[in-house]
Image (cartoon, rainbow, N blue to C red; front, top):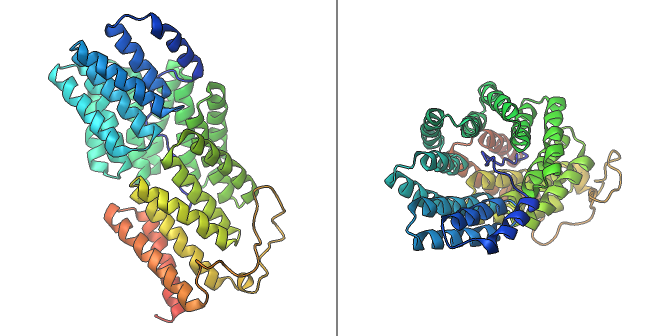
Amino acid sequence: MFAVLNGGALYAQLHGQPLIDSLLKELPHQKEDTNKVNLLTALSLTYYSINPDEGIKYGQQAQALATKLDWKKGIGSANNTIGVNYRFGKSDNPKALEYYQKALKIFSEIDYKKGIASVTPKIGDVYKYQRDYPKALEYYFKAIKMDEELGNTRETANVTGSIGDVYQMQCDYPKALEYYFKVLKLDEEMGNKNLIAKTAGTIGTVYAKQIDYPKALGYYYKALKIDEESGSKFEIAIVTGNIGNVYAAQSDYPKALEYDFISLKIGEEIGNKDMIAIVTGNIGDIYTNLKNYIMAIEYEQKALKKAEEIGDKHNASQQLENLGLAYLSLVTDTQWKAGIVRSSKMPEGKYLLSGQAGQPDAAIPAGKAARLHKAIDYLQQGLAICKEIKTLDVMQECYQHLAEAYKLRGDY
């Protein structure tokens, strides 16, 4: 099962190297006052998709100066942007939630409604990532009510999109599209290309899940064109990875791997562990489809390790399911056992390692019984996580593969 990359409800701030250069040019001329706090906070926010460590550094400088000035609004804003860098730049959700909650507490103390409206949906984002949908919706609906009261169209669009995300995660695709098209209309009215790209990419994902691949690719390429113009590596990596998913779903594995390796390379460059885990797992899934089970198991184990490091239970369950399928395929694929594993449909290419013949490495046990044991073990681990976080699509796959594994074992 291929995992979709999702940037979430990100900000509508300008970002990219040109803005960073402009802000850095102004920094030496600033006095030690609230204006400098705002500039440092802007630098912190702009860096999140390019270099989150720099973003955190400037956020901490903003926090320190605001504390010195006893400016609570500035302290709250600095905590907010530090949380953004941890959440989106470094995929560190516990740290992000810690800083978001600090910001919300400060904003609430001074009754700063704009700040409360800004940080509340970000807390919802963390809960959404953790698949706590009721908690996520609780924060989103609080935020959207406040945004509407403030007349903030931009943030209303962001939160509306996040509500669409929750429906999408629950596989209610018509409801999700209903919210996403509302967002796209708002984005186009505002003329914000970055937001149009994010929403177009999200709509592409919903169409892909509905198996409408032409529409999916149409919206993905629309998003990619805008992201390449803005130079946001984070967004480019998301869209290229999802384009890879569409090609993989159509069994165009050369194209799929081409886009997945682009996505993986960018994810490694910016140090985004969440992205690395997802794309690495998708590459492993492609190798399973190519009948190159040794490479599949290698990539899926790497993806599982990375998912466990960042506490992503959903992705971990997917990698356990994929590992179970790879070991199950080692038993059922008679051509592989015979060493005849190259498909005539797959040409030689830069990214293709299909058709690896010979014996598996020492980490892969020999014999049907041992491989079935491995398959069942991984699938049961994946199923346990699915039951915990109520991930029905992966749960379905685990049950299906387990049924086949027990049948092969003779346990009817």
